[in-house]
Length: 69
Image 1: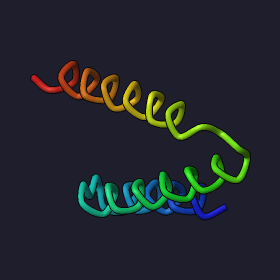
Image 2: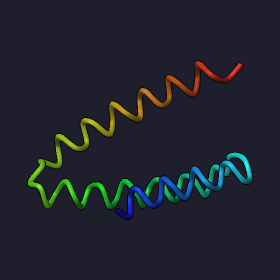
Image 3: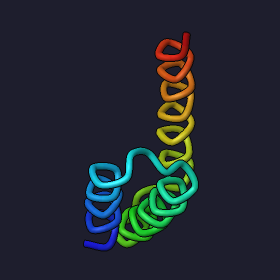
Image 4: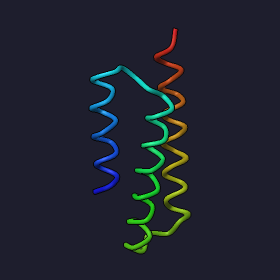
């Protein structure tokens, strides 16, 4: 639940204050940490996790470039 709670907290703060990049990054890193723990408990291979994270990061960078003027 920690990962879900962190993301919900980010959403709430963005609604109140607008985007807070440092706060959001810190909370998302915590959510990623907790998610990685859960994946390890389930026996997921670290290499598979890293492949998915790399793909998500690349896609996020592409989205960022598409949104910015």
